[in-house]
Image (tube, rainbow, N blue to C red; front, side, top):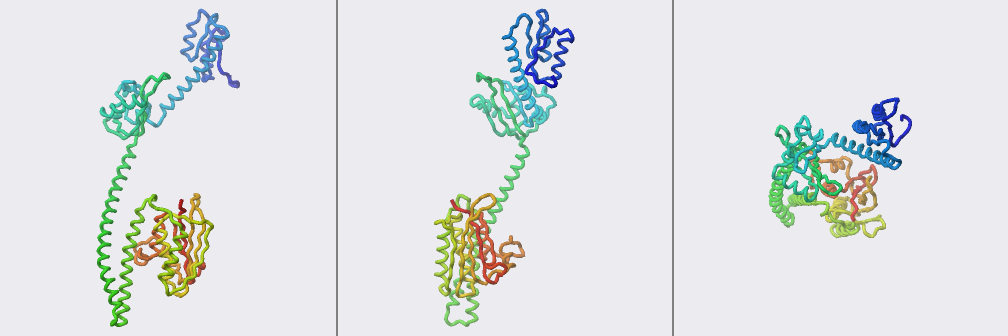
Length: 449
C-alpha cells in the first residue's frame, strides 16, 4: 500500500493470520483517505457494526452479496469517503477561520461557535455560549426582528452592528448572516460571520473630527480673505484713480509725474494680486468634472492677436510648429487661455527689443502610465530669467522667499493654475545655458476627450 494507489479496499474480517479489526486499524493508519468495505460471515454481522465504528465505510455479509452488490457498495463507499473528507475540510476551515463564525438554530439559539468567535467575545469554551440567543449578542431586540425578517424574505442580511462580549463590553463589527437551506430549499439553520472593526471605527471618528476642524479652519480663512480682499480693494481703488488723475494733469513737475506713474503701477499690481488670489481660489475649488476641454490652436491664435493689438509700438515675429491634428484638445478651458495669454503678455511687456520673436511648438507625449499629454513650448528673445530666479519661481514658497515669489507674479500664478488641472510648468533657457538670450516656457497639458 506504500507504493500503489487504490480507490478502495475490500477487507475480509475472517482472515486467520491477523484479527480483522486489527487489520482495519492498520490500513486506516497507513492510508486514512482510502474507503474500506469489510466482509463478515453470517454469524459475525456484529463485527461489521464494530468495523463501522472503527472507520469502515460499509460492510457486506457473505452469502448476501453478489457482483452487483459489491460494485454498488464500492461506489457508495468511495462517494461517502469523498463527502466525508469534504465535510472535514470545511469543518476545519470554519474552525480555523480568522473571521468569527457561528451557527444558530431556526429559533436563534447558538449551536456552534468557532475559535475566533469564542476568543473575540471572551468565552473559554463552546459550552459557555451554546444555547444563548444569537441576536442578544450581535444585535439588540429591536434590530433582531429586522434581521430575521430579512433572512426569511431574502435569505441574507449584511451590515454594521455591535457585538456584546461576555464581560458586557461592546465591539463594532461588520456582520453578514444567511439562511442555510437543504436541497429542497427548506431552512436548516442560520449562519453568521463577522469581523471586529472597532479600530477602524476609531480611525473613522478621528478622521471625521479632523475633517470638521479642517472645514472650520477653511471657512474662517475664507471669511478673513473675503474681508481682506474687500478692504484692500476699497483702499487701492481711490489710490489708482487719484494717481491716474495726477499723472494726466498738465501742470505737474516731471518728478511728481514719475512718482504718480509708479504709484499707479503699484496700485495696479495690488489689484492684480487680489484678482489672482480670487481666481486661484475659484480654480482650486473646481472638481475634475467641471474642467472642460479647449482647442489649443484657438487659444494660441487669440493670444497672438491680443498682444499685436495691445502692443502697437512693437513688431512680432511668431513662428509655429503644430501636429497634423485639426484640433488640439486639452483639459482646462478658461484656465489654459489665461495662462497662455499671460505668457504672451510677458514676452511682449518685458522685452527690451522693438522686434519680439516668439516661437510656438506643440508636441504629443505621454507619461509612464500611458496617459496622453500635449507639450506646449513658448520661447521668446527677451532678457531671459536667471537660474536663481527660475528656482525661486518654481520652488515651494516659504517665509524667506514670500516677498520675492509673490502670487502677484504672473509666472508664479500661471504655475499654480497649471497645477490645478494636473499639468506641469517648466521654465527653461531658449538657448540652453544662455539665459540672457531669452526664455522658453514648457507646459504639459492633459489631453482632452
